[in-house]
Image (cartoon, rainbow, N blue to C red; front, side, top):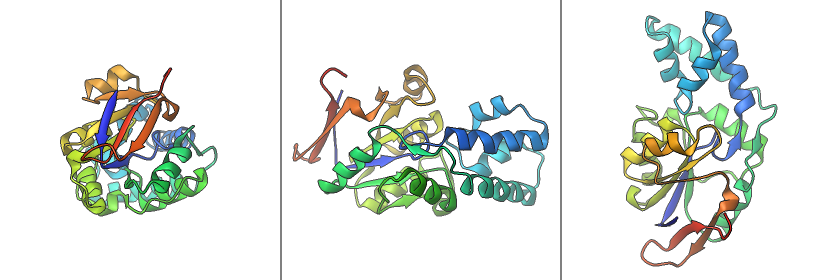
Length: 226
């Protein structure tokens, strides 16, 4: 794998931070509230904004009921960071990008309270650009979040790499026009590539980032032995 790029757009949960336990606790509570199958919920909502996931899960609910549920779920997730940690190699990669002045952003389906709580809990560098559902009219898998992320960085989306761990996020990045690298924390390479991820990694130790490499000024390639 070798890809040239000018900027990187990262998903947050499952891509830069491991928040699986906190996410599971919140959705298990939601499932218990409505006597739903929690395991089925978790497999279907990954990568989607909470309100959009709830609307799919409760198609007969009113807009007010969905909003109330979304706020309830947000409060649960924003106040539960137990077990939230940075994924191996994530902090080192972000610090390298900062040191080399390579633009990067976080594009997440978590709201501002959830995203900022998890960024702080995991101890990852705070991004200059943070795109959350509050900033867009349509969340992942729609391409709008990644298009906005590229715009805020001042980079064309086709010069961006996207790192994503969930099918909805991969679809969002691909349809925006970015090259998407799948991170195999929740889904295997077959699932991510079926959604048109260009390549997949198991962890950031598998990649090397270099600067001053042609018109896109940066490149990423597979580390020796990965």
